Image 1 (cartoon, rainbow, N blue to C red):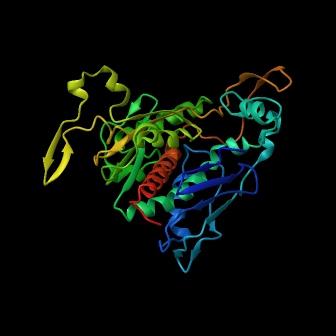
Image 2 (image 1 turned 180 degrees about the horizontal axis):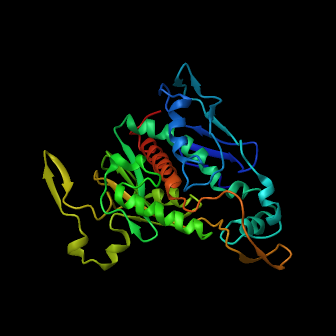
Amino acid sequence: MPGNSFGQVFRVMTFGESHGPAIGAVVDGVIPLLPLSAADIQVELDRRRPGQSNITTQRKESDTVEILSGVFEGKTTGAPIALLIRNEDAKSKDYEKFKDAFRPGHADFTYDAKFGIRDWRGGGRSSGRETAARVAVGAIAKKILLEKNIKVIAYTLAVGDIYAKKIDLSIIESNAVRCPDAGQAEAMIQKIQEVRKNGDSIGGIVEAVVRGCPPGLGDPVFDKLNAKLAAAVMSIGTIRGVEFGSGFASAKMNGSESNDVFFVQDGQIKTKTNHAGGILGGISTGADIVLRVAVKPPSSISIKQQTVTKAKENVEIQVTGRHDPCICPRVVPVVEAMVAMTLVDCLMLQGIIKR
């Protein structure tokens, strides 16, 4: 199956299905002598794993990572790193009744149309469970970025029409929805619980900020940094849109409002505003890179829905099992991972990080 690999120098391939024996990744291009342990990766996986709170799926997965290669005596060797995460709590019987029916909002129909076969157990390869492998690799990418004092931070900016009114990065991990506004976090949680009680789900917005990215990263025309970041985050199955800086709000601005005016401070060229989101002409400015992604409502809902079977018969289905009513809290570390992987690959391509 094509489309399972990512990156040019920092190269990643993920593998495995939601209800198979395991999922994992192989990453090549990791710099040698980087201190790395399973515990370093586990920290990030614990942020994404299911069963974290009463507003996430109750599938019980420890997401324990095993490093199979590429690390010796606590440091990377420069060889490919193989990562394995075993599936522990798959319940395929929940999906048997849908093996011939196409669930609305899922990739059942399109996978079948393309390949003529699909793994109906939890969506197989198209399941969000695949993103655990990305988060594992993202943990490595984040460690590499820290060597250059670059940090990627994401959080839930909105759930439905409830938005964070202030941004306090210190409290993101202190609430179940990973919102930087404690008051609004409670309102978001109540909204999620309300839609779950009604058998429904809800979407939201995740915002990511990159701090410490040097100016000059990225390439013009077809390999713009924002284009690569957009492709990376849009590869996450639940993402439906992406914007940088002022994004779609720029369409309502005049040029005099949208332009970020330059000035010099302490010998450094900076901008007074950051409507561009830290990228101009596809190249980083040195300001914070700011992007937001639209997260769709999870497709698995317990409300009865009309659909069709592969034999083109009209049927009514009701999805049961363990599902997230809102995926934003668990998407946060996935967005961070894809942004980090993209930045490392670009930094290596440009020779700023040398193998």
